[in-house]
Length: 284
Image (cartoon, rainbow, N blue to C red; front, side):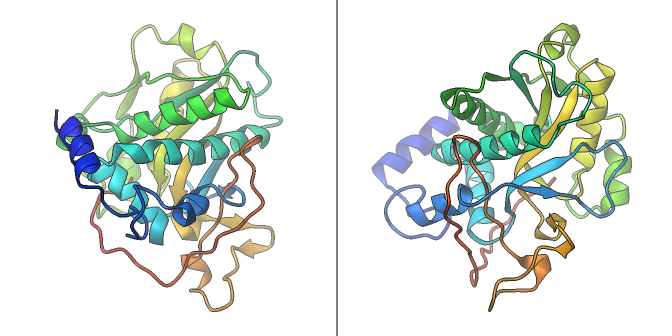
């Protein structure tokens, strides 16, 4: 019910862009271009948790991109799901393209997008499941581009876990070990195509590694993972870290563009710098 009230309030009292605050709708063209700009990138947290599949991210988790994700996730601005889903679709396409040689990558059937589940208490507090909503939007974008895809929300939390905020990489791994499990009877569904794990955000990779373990245990062929955003320090480039643009912050705080897949590719790169959004929230 609270989601409907937020949507109605957004129509009656339209807010500014969720990314930069400018007037003109939920997401201005500049911030939309930042999400779907120049090329999804391979991301690798350090340390990388055991069992983590190759992960591709649409954009670095900072500045306007961070603000947009938090607006959707914590403030329930559901109209942002379409843009975030298209960004995620680009990361999915790049993840599949980079999965050559991975067991199960060549199997037929549609792409199966398996979202990392949120804790029940988080879904209840927010009034929606952000990762699942974005995954559905991504599957729609992929289908419109000619790539069969569907969402399989088959993972469940089998036990309570501690809030991940404030935990380091080792403690997050310990916190999540064995926490996820497949829904009963989902093995047949997971066998229908290659699996790409999806989430809105990756920080240490612990959630994706645990999700990969659970899907593999159920017989699914995990060919990769895709997220809308990842910590800037996890972006990699041939020969070293992502370089800083002139006048921007150091490499650990740089911004990356994304590919919105084939046929989502666009040639422009929008660099975002100079603004930080003081918005709270939880990160995986």
